[in-house]
Image 1 (cartoon, rainbow, N blue to C red):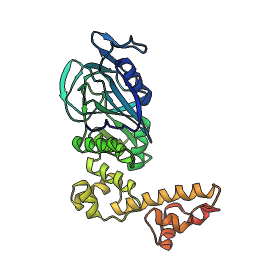
Image 2: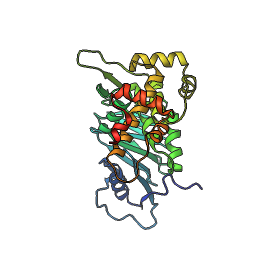
Image 3: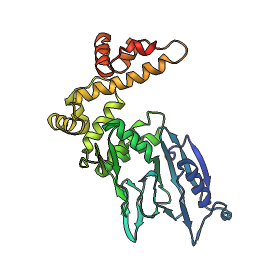
Image 4: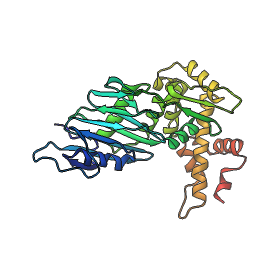
Length: 322
């Protein structure tokens, strides 16, 4: 029998649904209720009868994302209030009955909790679910990093239903793979959430301009580029990663970001280099040289790196080291 997901991060193992709920709250910071049997299990529930099956909560915070695996071991109803300042993603690992605003749905694919209505879930007692929570402000910061810091973003989660995500099976695979072996890079978890929410995400440049919606493949492309800055990439290979033709991908970059994919990547590399050089300039010890930083961000030719740096920031990279 395979070990539970996130087994290296145990939080609670108990027969009391209330204790398990408190453990989930402690990791995610998302307050919710759990009904077991005929009554609500509070913060200090009565002891479970001897021999009752014990549920499991494993979890931890990975960068901006709080991730938990929870399996209650007995039938329960989870009552999740409107999420407000958080984005909460549920990845059912077995069939899950979900009710929002009186409408019932059987969910087997990932979904986001409503920001405007309570969601009642009956998870599979044995299989459980993965639950991820991220502050809405952190998600907005990632959108600004990806599509422009000066833009206003809106993510429409005020829907009275379990909100589906783009590329749900791929997201489930990314999250489940990480939870089975959480020693790797956690950034694909939030990147896949950004992509998953793309159908509900819009932006505008000012109050005088209309709202626009970036396609999901563009969101996936920009998050992939930022995650792999030091690696060589061509437009064709990027198109293969996101499953779209080179020409259509280039047109999307120009329409939504005002530059080609190559220009976007170069600017992202230079922005990262600025941060590395700025931090190194004010730190102690033996900071990396300009050439080392240039290589780290994927522009190994130092002369060309300095030229691009001056064009973007108006100063030489060496000046940040003074």
